[in-house]
Image (cartoon, rainbow, N blue to C red):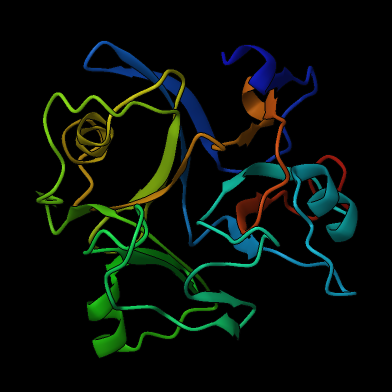
Amino acid sequence: MRGLAALLVLIAAPAGAVECSDVVHLDQSFTICDVDPAQDDLRLFLRDETGEILGSFGAIEEAAGRPLSFAMNAGMYHEDRSPVGLYIEDGREEMRAIASDGPGNFGLLPNGVFCIAPERARVIETRAYLDEDPECRHATQSGPMLVVEGALHPRLIPGGTSRHFRNGVGTSAEGDRAVFAISNDPVNFHDFATLFRDHLGLPDALYFDGKISRLHAPELGRSDFGWRMGPIVGVLAPLDGPGGTD
Protein backbone atom coordinates (compact mmCIF):
# COMPACT_ATOMS: atom_id res chain seq x y z
CA MET A 1 0.00 0.00 0.00
CA ARG A 2 1.15 3.51 -0.67
CA GLY A 3 1.21 5.20 2.75
CA LEU A 4 -0.41 8.63 2.68
CA ALA A 5 -1.18 8.21 -1.02
CA ALA A 6 -3.78 5.54 -0.24
CA LEU A 7 -6.94 5.52 1.85
CA LEU A 8 -8.36 2.20 2.95
CA VAL A 9 -12.12 2.22 2.82
CA LEU A 10 -13.60 -0.64 4.81
CA ILE A 11 -16.76 -1.12 2.81
CA ALA A 12 -18.15 -4.09 0.96
CA ALA A 13 -17.41 -4.15 -2.74
CA PRO A 14 -20.40 -3.45 -4.99
CA ALA A 15 -21.78 -6.41 -6.89
CA GLY A 16 -20.24 -6.84 -10.31
CA ALA A 17 -17.84 -8.91 -12.32
CA VAL A 18 -14.74 -6.74 -11.84
CA GLU A 19 -12.00 -8.75 -10.15
CA CYS A 20 -9.11 -6.93 -8.48
CA SER A 21 -6.09 -8.59 -6.92
CA ASP A 22 -2.48 -8.00 -5.97
CA VAL A 23 0.16 -9.78 -8.06
CA VAL A 24 3.95 -9.99 -8.05
CA HIS A 25 5.98 -9.62 -11.24
CA LEU A 26 9.78 -9.42 -11.32
CA ASP A 27 9.73 -9.24 -7.50
CA GLN A 28 7.58 -6.09 -7.69
CA SER A 29 4.02 -5.61 -6.43
CA PHE A 30 1.13 -4.54 -8.65
CA THR A 31 -2.63 -4.36 -8.28
CA ILE A 32 -4.68 -5.43 -11.29
CA CYS A 33 -8.39 -5.16 -12.02
CA ASP A 34 -9.82 -7.47 -14.68
CA VAL A 35 -12.84 -6.10 -16.54
CA ASP A 36 -15.20 -7.83 -18.97
CA PRO A 37 -16.37 -5.10 -21.41
CA ALA A 38 -19.37 -7.20 -22.43
CA GLN A 39 -20.65 -7.49 -18.88
CA ASP A 40 -19.33 -4.49 -16.95
CA ASP A 41 -20.53 -0.89 -17.31
CA LEU A 42 -17.10 0.42 -18.34
CA ARG A 43 -16.91 4.09 -19.28
CA LEU A 44 -14.92 7.33 -19.03
CA PHE A 45 -15.69 10.28 -16.79
CA LEU A 46 -14.50 13.88 -17.01
CA ARG A 47 -17.21 16.51 -16.40
CA ASP A 48 -20.50 16.80 -14.55
CA GLU A 49 -23.73 18.05 -16.12
CA THR A 50 -22.63 21.67 -15.66
CA GLY A 51 -19.31 21.12 -17.43
CA GLU A 52 -17.21 21.19 -14.29
CA ILE A 53 -14.37 18.66 -14.02
CA LEU A 54 -15.32 15.81 -11.67
CA GLY A 55 -11.75 15.09 -10.64
CA SER A 56 -12.31 12.42 -8.01
CA PHE A 57 -13.88 9.01 -7.50
CA GLY A 58 -16.35 10.36 -4.94
CA ALA A 59 -17.53 13.09 -7.29
CA ILE A 60 -18.27 10.48 -9.97
CA GLU A 61 -20.34 8.40 -7.58
CA GLU A 62 -22.26 11.46 -6.43
CA ALA A 63 -22.98 12.58 -9.99
CA ALA A 64 -23.93 9.06 -11.18
CA GLY A 65 -25.98 8.17 -8.12
CA ARG A 66 -24.27 4.78 -8.18
CA PRO A 67 -21.11 3.35 -6.62
CA LEU A 68 -18.03 2.49 -8.64
CA SER A 69 -16.87 -1.12 -8.71
CA PHE A 70 -13.49 0.08 -9.95
CA ALA A 71 -11.84 3.28 -11.25
CA MET A 72 -8.45 4.84 -12.02
CA ASN A 73 -7.03 7.92 -13.73
CA ALA A 74 -7.04 7.42 -17.50
CA GLY A 75 -4.76 9.67 -19.49
CA MET A 76 -2.69 12.82 -19.28
CA TYR A 77 -4.18 16.26 -18.84
CA HIS A 78 -3.36 19.97 -18.75
CA GLU A 79 -3.30 22.20 -15.65
CA ASP A 80 -7.04 22.80 -16.02
CA ARG A 81 -7.39 18.97 -16.10
CA SER A 82 -8.64 18.95 -19.71
CA PRO A 83 -7.31 16.01 -21.77
CA VAL A 84 -4.03 16.35 -23.67
CA GLY A 85 -5.11 14.12 -26.57
CA LEU A 86 -8.19 12.39 -27.93
CA TYR A 87 -11.09 12.26 -25.54
CA ILE A 88 -14.56 10.88 -26.34
CA GLU A 89 -17.30 10.44 -23.75
CA ASP A 90 -20.73 9.01 -24.58
CA GLY A 91 -19.96 9.45 -28.27
CA ARG A 92 -19.02 13.16 -27.99
CA GLU A 93 -15.47 14.12 -28.93
CA GLU A 94 -14.03 16.82 -26.67
CA MET A 95 -10.45 16.67 -27.95
CA ARG A 96 -9.04 15.35 -31.23
CA ALA A 97 -6.30 12.72 -31.57
CA ILE A 98 -2.70 13.94 -31.78
CA ALA A 99 -0.52 11.78 -34.05
CA SER A 100 2.69 13.86 -34.08
CA ASP A 101 5.60 13.28 -31.74
CA GLY A 102 6.32 15.75 -28.98
CA PRO A 103 7.75 16.25 -25.51
CA GLY A 104 7.17 14.01 -22.54
CA ASN A 105 5.77 10.53 -22.31
CA PHE A 106 2.65 11.38 -24.32
CA GLY A 107 4.73 12.33 -27.36
CA LEU A 108 7.03 9.30 -27.19
CA LEU A 109 5.65 7.56 -30.28
CA PRO A 110 4.05 5.19 -30.71
CA ASN A 111 1.34 6.32 -28.34
CA GLY A 112 -2.19 4.99 -28.34
CA VAL A 113 -5.91 5.13 -27.70
CA PHE A 114 -8.01 3.16 -25.26
CA CYS A 115 -11.32 2.64 -27.08
CA ILE A 116 -14.48 1.41 -25.37
CA ALA A 117 -17.09 0.13 -27.81
CA PRO A 118 -20.26 -1.88 -27.17
CA GLU A 119 -19.21 -5.18 -25.54
CA ARG A 120 -15.49 -4.72 -26.26
CA ALA A 121 -12.53 -2.55 -25.37
CA ARG A 122 -9.22 -2.21 -27.22
CA VAL A 123 -5.87 -0.49 -26.96
CA ILE A 124 -5.02 0.79 -30.45
CA GLU A 125 -1.86 2.54 -31.64
CA THR A 126 -2.82 6.13 -32.53
CA ARG A 127 -2.05 6.07 -36.25
CA ALA A 128 -3.79 2.71 -36.61
CA TYR A 129 -6.76 4.25 -34.80
CA LEU A 130 -6.86 7.14 -37.28
CA ASP A 131 -6.64 4.74 -40.23
CA GLU A 132 -9.28 2.40 -38.85
CA ASP A 133 -11.60 5.10 -37.45
CA PRO A 134 -13.37 2.67 -35.08
CA GLU A 135 -16.66 3.56 -33.41
CA CYS A 136 -15.73 4.26 -29.80
CA ARG A 137 -18.44 5.15 -27.31
CA HIS A 138 -15.63 6.31 -25.03
CA ALA A 139 -11.95 6.87 -25.86
CA THR A 140 -8.89 8.38 -24.24
CA GLN A 141 -5.43 8.90 -25.73
CA SER A 142 -2.21 8.57 -23.78
CA GLY A 143 1.37 7.47 -24.26
CA PRO A 144 3.59 5.80 -24.73
CA MET A 145 2.24 2.47 -25.87
CA LEU A 146 3.76 -0.21 -23.66
CA VAL A 147 3.04 -3.22 -25.87
CA VAL A 148 2.05 -3.14 -29.56
CA GLU A 149 0.86 -6.42 -31.07
CA GLY A 150 3.01 -8.39 -28.64
CA ALA A 151 6.17 -6.26 -29.02
CA LEU A 152 7.47 -3.88 -26.37
CA HIS A 153 7.77 -0.20 -27.23
CA PRO A 154 11.26 0.09 -28.79
CA ARG A 155 12.34 2.91 -26.45
CA LEU A 156 11.75 0.95 -23.25
CA ILE A 157 15.08 0.09 -21.63
CA PRO A 158 15.65 -2.99 -19.42
CA GLY A 159 16.95 -1.80 -16.07
CA GLY A 160 15.86 1.80 -16.71
CA THR A 161 16.55 4.08 -13.76
CA SER A 162 13.41 6.23 -14.07
CA ARG A 163 11.09 4.70 -11.51
CA HIS A 164 7.64 5.97 -10.54
CA PHE A 165 4.26 4.69 -9.46
CA ARG A 166 2.66 3.91 -12.83
CA ASN A 167 -0.72 2.82 -14.15
CA GLY A 168 -2.11 1.65 -17.48
CA VAL A 169 -4.36 -0.78 -19.32
CA GLY A 170 -3.89 -3.83 -21.51
CA THR A 171 -6.42 -5.58 -23.73
CA SER A 172 -6.82 -8.90 -25.47
CA ALA A 173 -6.68 -9.10 -29.27
CA GLU A 174 -10.43 -9.83 -29.38
CA GLY A 175 -11.27 -6.91 -27.10
CA ASP A 176 -13.14 -9.15 -24.67
CA ARG A 177 -10.78 -8.49 -21.75
CA ALA A 178 -9.34 -5.28 -20.32
CA VAL A 179 -6.89 -5.41 -17.44
CA PHE A 180 -6.01 -2.24 -15.56
CA ALA A 181 -2.82 -2.21 -13.52
CA ILE A 182 -1.07 0.07 -11.06
CA SER A 183 2.31 -0.43 -9.43
CA ASN A 184 2.40 -0.47 -5.65
CA ASP A 185 6.03 0.60 -5.65
CA PRO A 186 8.07 2.74 -8.06
CA VAL A 187 8.73 0.78 -11.26
CA ASN A 188 10.44 1.48 -14.59
CA PHE A 189 8.65 1.47 -17.93
CA HIS A 190 10.21 -1.78 -19.15
CA ASP A 191 9.15 -3.84 -16.14
CA PHE A 192 5.67 -2.30 -16.22
CA ALA A 193 5.30 -3.20 -19.90
CA THR A 194 6.37 -6.80 -19.35
CA LEU A 195 3.70 -7.13 -16.67
CA PHE A 196 1.11 -6.85 -19.45
CA ARG A 197 2.92 -8.89 -22.09
CA ASP A 198 4.56 -11.66 -20.06
CA HIS A 199 2.54 -11.94 -16.85
CA LEU A 200 -0.95 -11.12 -18.16
CA GLY A 201 -0.48 -12.34 -21.75
CA LEU A 202 -2.00 -9.24 -23.34
CA PRO A 203 -0.76 -8.17 -26.81
CA ASP A 204 -1.54 -4.45 -26.50
CA ALA A 205 -1.05 -2.13 -23.54
CA LEU A 206 -1.10 1.62 -22.97
CA TYR A 207 0.52 3.77 -20.29
CA PHE A 208 -1.87 6.13 -18.53
CA ASP A 209 0.39 8.10 -16.18
CA GLY A 210 2.91 8.09 -13.36
CA LYS A 211 3.38 9.91 -10.06
CA ILE A 212 -0.31 10.85 -9.84
CA SER A 213 -1.57 7.28 -10.46
CA ARG A 214 -4.68 6.50 -8.42
CA LEU A 215 -6.86 3.40 -7.97
CA HIS A 216 -10.34 2.88 -6.55
CA ALA A 217 -10.87 -0.81 -5.79
CA PRO A 218 -13.48 -1.23 -3.03
CA GLU A 219 -13.20 -5.02 -3.42
CA LEU A 220 -9.74 -4.62 -1.87
CA GLY A 221 -10.77 -1.90 0.57
CA ARG A 222 -8.70 0.64 -1.37
CA SER A 223 -9.46 4.14 -2.62
CA ASP A 224 -6.40 6.32 -3.28
CA PHE A 225 -6.58 10.05 -2.71
CA GLY A 226 -4.39 12.98 -3.66
CA TRP A 227 -4.33 15.43 -6.55
CA ARG A 228 -7.59 15.98 -8.41
CA MET A 229 -7.59 14.10 -11.70
CA GLY A 230 -8.58 14.71 -15.31
CA PRO A 231 -10.04 11.77 -17.30
CA ILE A 232 -11.03 8.79 -15.18
CA VAL A 233 -12.01 5.30 -16.33
CA GLY A 234 -14.32 3.21 -14.21
CA VAL A 235 -17.05 0.62 -13.90
CA LEU A 236 -20.35 1.64 -12.37
CA ALA A 237 -21.94 -0.97 -10.13
CA PRO A 238 -25.08 -2.67 -11.52
CA LEU A 239 -28.31 -0.84 -10.86
CA ASP A 240 -29.62 -3.82 -8.88
CA GLY A 241 -26.43 -4.13 -6.84
CA PRO A 242 -25.68 -2.62 -3.41
CA GLY A 243 -26.30 1.11 -3.56
CA GLY A 244 -28.23 0.80 -6.82
CA THR A 245 -31.91 0.97 -7.61
CA ASP A 246 -34.18 -1.27 -9.63
